[in-house]
Length: 203
Image 1 (cartoon, helix red, strand yellow):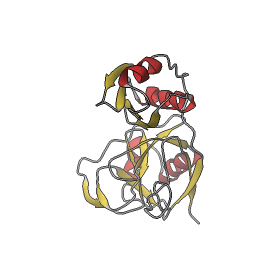
Image 2 (cartoon, rainbow, N blue to C red):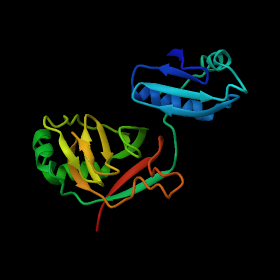
Image 3 (spheres, rainbow, N blue to C red):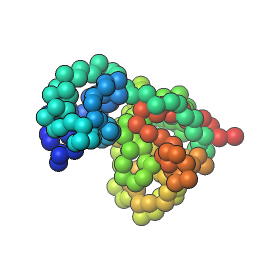
């Protein structure tokens, strides 16, 4: 780990990959570090925010150096089922590229358990990582200028649900009516880091 002061109220931790991020995030959730307000994971970093009135960069950094995440550990924030209609514009292209049938791709997606690794790109967009083996799916060479809200997409080994209409280069395999972002809900995001996600076929 590489620890860097991030202003006077946060420490940025750099690690090798997302698995290390998830393990570190899980370990930090179990720690009781004085003054820490929030732990914010990303693809290869974890930002630890704290109250400078209660502690300092130096004190938090020393405590963080003694955190030892377990291999394969992941944060836990409940489980959510998301119903999906598998009629995405890229479903056939993705399945062909993987050497699978459409039915095999859908079955594999339904069988997989996903974990929200981190949230970014747009409010409520969770980067879901597979708990088991999952193939690489390349991003589209020609990103769309508008992806509809509720679209379910794949890119790399990530899966994601678009919270609202926005540009995007992920391959679309389906759609859902699940409100993954709602400003009138507390919290607004349905999927926060550590949420387990099971996709189910919409009736």
